[in-house]
Length: 521
Image 1 (cartoon, rainbow, N blue to C red):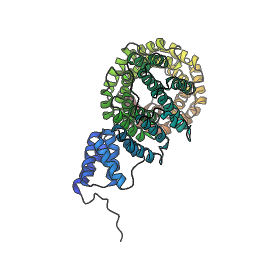
Image 2: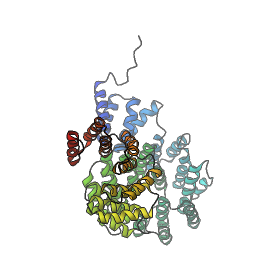
Image 3: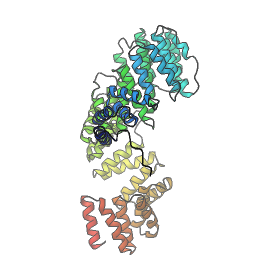
Image 4: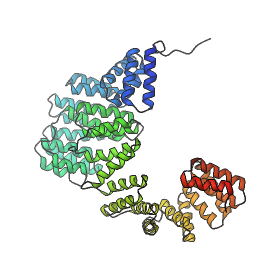
């Protein structure tokens, strides 16, 4: 009888124990503990690619570059190193000024999915080796869209770095005109221009209300010296920013780490890395990274905003709310800052404070408040028991956005539950259902409107469909139970009420208990 192949670490108890411990820490998002345990497991079972690949990813998250390199060595020996390992090899070589090694790593990269980065890396290496005309190496537009974009942007930066400042400025302006508002390109070009003695152009390039650009204008100083460390780190950061929200997030983490190896003060890379780690479940490590950013950083306001998101993901809602409040109270806080603060206040049940935050956001909205702010303010007022004020806000939301189902549903359902303007409420909910026929919440609202107006036969299919789609929704299940009872289906009514009771709390639970005991009065 054939037996299954034993894993390489099966005969190494200590290594196995460390591996199991690492997997548990990994699942818990404890990246430092996981990285340490994976390191112990790899040390106990050297040459094991199964452990090495997990150690590699976890060490990148934890920032343990010694383990990252050891894992890469193991994976390369086994012939299974991931393509993004060349990113670390490039960063190590450029950081050490080992130009032949940097070019060799770029050549390896050119044979894989990151081939579009290789020409840019080699151009910056050539610049650092004394080639002031390294920009010519990127004159070719490249094989695809990514190649064209990265070649064009870095050619413009290399022209400025190599002393062809006016030509570089002209290309930057063309790129910005074609691409709309590339923040990274503006920042990188401005820093090189300031170093080249063209602070006036740098400030013009960073004009506008964006907080990062405004902070940069104040802190330009002598800018940044051009070189391979600058160019390659910004190249990696630029790509990481594009990848952090998608399926290629692990690559964004590698790129972020590599960028910080080249420039530990690159707060943009730190911000992107923290975003990627947070989205990957490593919130504690992400928060620690963001906590390292000083108030003097041009990215500090952005970092605070990111910290709110990460803290919220990590369940640290009090800290998230406090940080959002700090941002909202800061000079120059915008409508989005106040809107985010209002959202967190609603989640905390502080409806009056949320309504006030949304009101401030409406005043600061550049083009006037849109329907969403009216809806949010109206929702906060309604939940805070201030219905007449809420109704005016919700009516304005519907007036501004008559084809937005969420606005129609909110106002229609709010009136329905108060027994006001039932015909108008039903009409709104019917329109919302036509706009969003698959929305369970809207189906429930319309079904409940039909119940309230005695149209049980029309209500039942809507409520049953909503209940199937949202079996844990207390309101939907209760509405279905009420509809069953009114149609004489008492057994099914109690079944629906019991389903609602599973997730009900406080007043809802007491009301459902009474219905289960005595039915509807």
